[in-house]
Image (cartoon, rainbow over all chains, first blue to last red; front, side, top):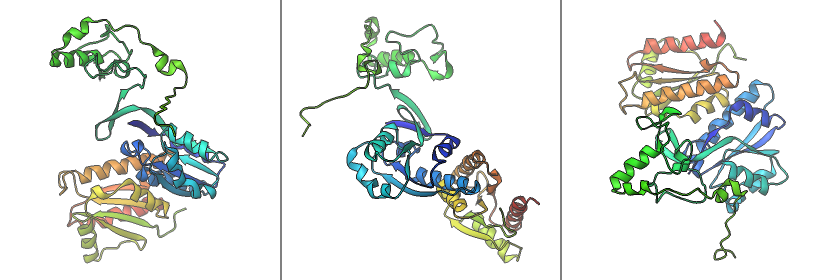
Length: 222
Length: 129
């Protein structure tokens, strides 16, 4: 899922400075699970903004809502009536949600309340780690189900590098060496011979290097 | 601006904070007029949303009364409450408010005296005494 974290409150207050009435919109999908932009976070952030603006002698009215999902046009209807009555929307969805808000409610500013961070999962309660770089050309079948693109600091396809020490990456003792994990996993699977194969240079055109990406499924189009 | 009779919302664990409050009342100890007590089944139910909402709706301060470490009936509710309080204290500081507007107060059930003292200390802090 998409992992995000709230922007510094100073930045949010600066964005909202010109406004007296806004919609604060959470999202019921990924950012609810990572507890950055769900219904609870909408409540806490709305209160914090109101208290800050009240203290500054410049009160703001905030309408609170949490859409089922902000990443699909169908769910934008949930905010339609609420948007009529506000000057702007502060979206605490991922960047996709903010952009869909901006596109749907074209005449009103849409501000991001979160920094969209990465694709990952909760390793334990309150700890989120990256697992996928959305590179568009998956190699997990070659690497024991451990992604060298997202989890190796150098995104090496044929690792490890000389910076691997005692199973840790040279960038930090808290970061596992992805290639050590790959070795351990392939060993457990009895597939260490995979390591003897050189993975050829990757075609990065399927990643960001090819520009904004698009998938068209003619079988699904109406 | 805090009035002479500040509004304080006390979120009280039913295992410690509430008995301590009731003990303070039964002893006839002075409690400020602006004190509003909210019973919670456990300190762990003191969610960040409730605490911030109280400030948002006009409370001058929020206090969370929960069990001492190691005494929580639900094992970690008090620890979670303290972490949430600390999280909100940081958020208050970032908007230029005193972190003392949200405090965590561990208490034992039969500590009415301590309950009253902690509330009075919070009043004094708010009034800058």
